[in-house]
Image (tube, rainbow, N blue to C red; front, side, top):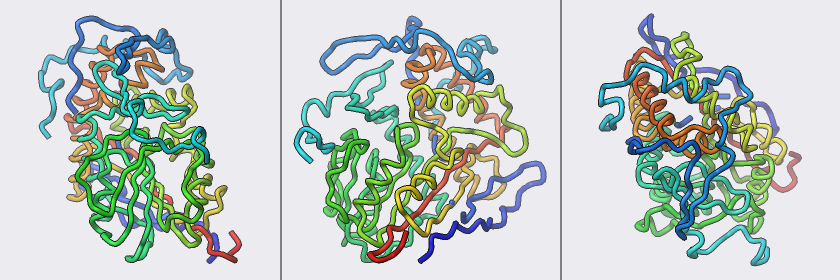
Length: 407
């Protein structure tokens, strides 16, 4: 099979009211973003980090609020906006060798979480970076986004053309484990492994599934050709080198096996100008873009074409690409898109603070009250229905050439 570029055919957009432009569901060429934290009694200019051993430290990186992008509004901007006295703005909307090996056992050090502004995060290990909370509040949010993903893909867990007799499957960065659980249920004859830096997965799981604690930024310990399908989703902002990671995937796949990568953009935008540059929605992507520069882990994976470049460099062929516009809110006239947007809004409202607290306080110098006020403005914009917001997501699928094929 030849390594031809993916098709760029775009399905017809759903019919919408004239005044309400609709996001495209996908293009056959082929992201996510909660009850806010309690209001602290005092303003802390830097995050206070408490480890499981009880020690406390502060992060010097948050001492100043400096960015290289003049389009990013300072955190104080949100404090100076009209006060949000409506209580609903702050409430849930109701809805190799032992020393070098990346695989770790469930020891006390792995279960040692750090607490930042009342939220728990996994402790840093090596060059691994996990900026999402691993507490129950954020887990529920990510499970909602899993539902959004399957709705977006017409009920499908994956888009790769794998066979019904798939045998060994790896879910990289499995998070709550919900994708791996659903996949194991759908393919009871397959052996499924979910791997993540944080052991936050449930205990009651299908018998053909197991979870491992692993730092996937380190050299992998799986034997070459161990899997016939590898899945990866939403690692944006965590990977220092996608090409190195995809090369590990390539090695771990058997010849002819498939690799599927789904990523989300941090950029929230609109096609009709209803998401203004100075809105809380637009500032979301600008701030995350700045953070990515500071930590050396890009939040612009889709905009930079990182997935395709890394797959090509790793040696994958027959690339298939799917682009999605993921609405935020029930504004689309199309029923399916409106349902996707409603669940997506629910997820972001439930834990906007969870997405931004760790990185924005540590890297941009925001205080927790500033995070809370910004999040309130974000929720108000979402609930207004005036902003036809969406963010891009992209799926890239590649195949490892069979023996004798020229990649």
